[in-house]
Image 1 (cartoon, rainbow, N blue to C red):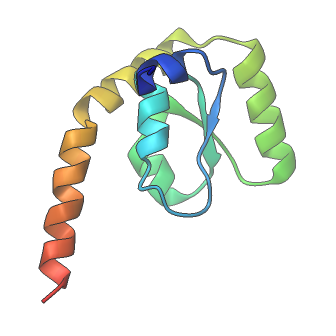
Image 2: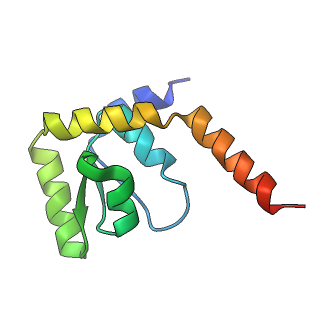
Length: 105
Protein backbone atom coordinates (compact mmCIF):
# COMPACT_ATOMS: atom_id res chain seq x y z
CA UNK A 1 0.00 0.00 0.00
CA UNK A 2 1.35 3.42 -0.93
CA UNK A 3 1.56 6.18 1.61
CA UNK A 4 -0.62 9.26 1.27
CA UNK A 5 2.45 11.42 0.79
CA UNK A 6 3.73 9.22 -2.05
CA UNK A 7 0.31 9.42 -3.69
CA UNK A 8 0.29 13.21 -3.49
CA UNK A 9 3.88 13.38 -4.74
CA UNK A 10 2.65 11.87 -8.01
CA UNK A 11 -0.04 14.55 -8.27
CA UNK A 12 0.16 17.83 -10.09
CA UNK A 13 -2.26 20.15 -8.28
CA UNK A 14 -4.83 20.13 -5.52
CA UNK A 15 -7.99 22.17 -5.38
CA UNK A 16 -9.91 22.55 -2.16
CA UNK A 17 -13.52 21.50 -2.52
CA UNK A 18 -16.50 23.47 -1.30
CA UNK A 19 -17.69 20.79 1.12
CA UNK A 20 -16.12 19.36 4.27
CA UNK A 21 -12.71 17.83 4.66
CA UNK A 22 -11.36 20.31 7.21
CA UNK A 23 -8.53 21.11 4.79
CA UNK A 24 -6.71 17.84 5.44
CA UNK A 25 -6.38 16.95 1.75
CA UNK A 26 -5.01 20.41 1.05
CA UNK A 27 -2.44 20.10 3.86
CA UNK A 28 -1.38 16.67 2.61
CA UNK A 29 -0.89 18.11 -0.86
CA UNK A 30 1.15 21.01 0.49
CA UNK A 31 3.31 18.62 2.51
CA UNK A 32 4.16 16.83 -0.73
CA UNK A 33 4.92 20.07 -2.54
CA UNK A 34 1.83 19.87 -4.74
CA UNK A 35 0.51 23.31 -5.81
CA UNK A 36 -2.76 24.31 -4.18
CA UNK A 37 -5.52 26.36 -5.81
CA UNK A 38 -8.43 27.47 -3.62
CA UNK A 39 -11.41 29.81 -3.66
CA UNK A 40 -10.60 33.37 -2.72
CA UNK A 41 -12.31 33.45 0.67
CA UNK A 42 -11.03 35.28 3.76
CA UNK A 43 -10.87 32.07 5.80
CA UNK A 44 -8.81 30.31 3.12
CA UNK A 45 -6.46 33.27 2.79
CA UNK A 46 -6.03 33.18 6.57
CA UNK A 47 -5.26 29.46 6.60
CA UNK A 48 -3.21 29.02 3.42
CA UNK A 49 -1.67 32.49 2.95
CA UNK A 50 1.31 32.51 0.59
CA UNK A 51 1.21 28.72 0.15
CA UNK A 52 -1.81 28.75 -2.20
CA UNK A 53 -3.08 30.39 -5.34
CA UNK A 54 -6.50 32.02 -5.02
CA UNK A 55 -9.35 32.70 -7.43
CA UNK A 56 -13.01 33.65 -7.09
CA UNK A 57 -14.55 32.71 -10.46
CA UNK A 58 -14.50 29.55 -12.57
CA UNK A 59 -12.36 31.39 -15.10
CA UNK A 60 -9.99 32.55 -12.39
CA UNK A 61 -9.72 29.03 -10.98
CA UNK A 62 -8.96 27.68 -14.46
CA UNK A 63 -6.26 30.33 -14.97
CA UNK A 64 -4.73 29.66 -11.54
CA UNK A 65 -4.69 25.92 -12.23
CA UNK A 66 -3.02 26.59 -15.57
CA UNK A 67 -0.32 28.66 -13.88
CA UNK A 68 0.17 26.01 -11.20
CA UNK A 69 0.61 23.31 -13.84
CA UNK A 70 3.03 25.24 -16.02
CA UNK A 71 5.07 27.33 -13.60
CA UNK A 72 6.80 25.82 -10.56
CA UNK A 73 6.94 28.32 -7.70
CA UNK A 74 9.61 27.26 -5.19
CA UNK A 75 8.71 30.05 -2.74
CA UNK A 76 5.05 28.96 -2.66
CA UNK A 77 6.06 25.28 -2.41
CA UNK A 78 8.36 25.99 0.55
CA UNK A 79 5.62 28.02 2.26
CA UNK A 80 3.25 25.09 1.77
CA UNK A 81 5.65 22.60 3.27
CA UNK A 82 6.25 24.85 6.28
CA UNK A 83 2.50 25.31 6.78
CA UNK A 84 1.80 21.59 6.51
CA UNK A 85 4.58 20.80 8.97
CA UNK A 86 2.80 22.95 11.57
CA UNK A 87 -0.54 21.16 11.02
CA UNK A 88 0.00 17.41 11.13
CA UNK A 89 -2.78 14.87 10.65
CA UNK A 90 -2.40 13.76 14.28
CA UNK A 91 -2.71 17.31 15.55
CA UNK A 92 -5.76 17.91 13.37
CA UNK A 93 -7.35 14.71 14.63
CA UNK A 94 -6.80 15.68 18.26
CA UNK A 95 -8.26 19.17 17.71
CA UNK A 96 -11.33 17.77 15.98
CA UNK A 97 -11.90 15.20 18.72
CA UNK A 98 -11.58 17.91 21.38
CA UNK A 99 -14.10 20.05 19.51
CA UNK A 100 -16.58 17.18 19.12
CA UNK A 101 -16.26 16.32 22.80
CA UNK A 102 -16.95 19.95 23.70
CA UNK A 103 -20.24 20.07 21.79
CA UNK A 104 -21.66 16.64 22.59
CA UNK A 105 -23.21 15.57 25.89
